[in-house]
Length: 492
Image 1 (cartoon, rainbow, N blue to C red):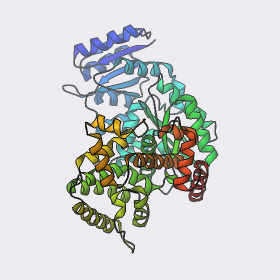
Image 2 (image 1 turned 60 degrees about the vertical axis):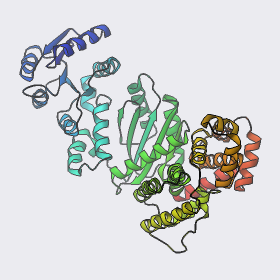
Image 3 (image 1 turned 120 degrees about the horizontal axis):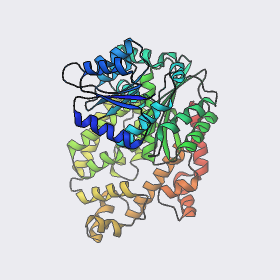
Image 4 (image 1 turned 180 degrees about the vertical axis):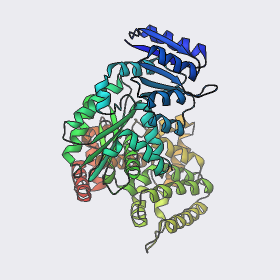
């Protein structure tokens, strides 16, 4: 028999939950109510419910008194906690009490139905055989994310890993794969099927957590994952979810899990910025100086074009925080700087002849850019707006007439000042920017070349794309990709 106990100090909340569950027709034999922890314990002793929905914040004793009562007596029931105030200490306590699911108030009907169906499907044998992380999806994701992305102490994480089975991941290499998928239903079942499919690739020690449309896989293995294995994983994810974005980092076990996770998240965000579906970006294969300069390029250039010294220092500060976090050398930065800002006034600066630290390079760049800004203090704000529009809409069919109309600028004025202050016509600037984005996609994704052409604005002009790319880079798109892949494989 399936009996449900709803514990909440607000009667209207209990009644609303019961109405939703009755409409779902999930087959509960009895739905019980309790308005405080002590009443809940009395109901548990009398009726032995199989599932308990438990509010945490209530007058008097909070809901964890009930959770501890159940956990300490090893009662055969699943507990789903409800709270409007998710906090990390709640998560730690929930892990200790082996909470089965986690709902944020106000409770959404779809989320409630998803969690209830999940709990009702799992049998007791499977729960004892291994932690059913699908049951704990949102709770464990919040817990891991809180640890891996914050300054939470390793002592706190010891509690988490001991209670989740993460300690069992003992291997020479650790792989973290973070994937983000488009809304689909039922997400949790598809992620479960994906986990089983990954196990079929002979990847051992797979641990995964999932929240909404993001999933984290932590995989232990005896050696670094090969390119063929990475491609096989991409095919499996695409089989369940299309489209998806994914980032991956593979490191020896001596590297902390927190560091590997942060690298995988960076790779995911980079993949997302490239707007390339169904592709896994490997952290180690990213040209980090190029990626970070591209990430911060628009803010730096916009501040420069608008003559904003404070905005410029802030934009450069954000860039160098990222560079330091990802251990990029100053030499790599100023080697890449000229290419990133090619055909703009920022490429005209004198770069240092000797090696510098990142802090020294940052001070040098600030001084150099301010000098250039002082020499061109009459740069119109409108030029910066045109540049930003290109950054935001480069894949669309653009010309200066259209952009000037969109920004309410006189065409003749826009044409004159744009060339004067960028040193390039609008058409040439747009073409070079599109080709730079194409090179980035070729290097960091597995998209077909015709797909790359379409994504950067050459959807109906592939021949011109090939011609212009070779003219600019001295290689055909396929040759460029092959050259970069050889360099990346040498780094693996």
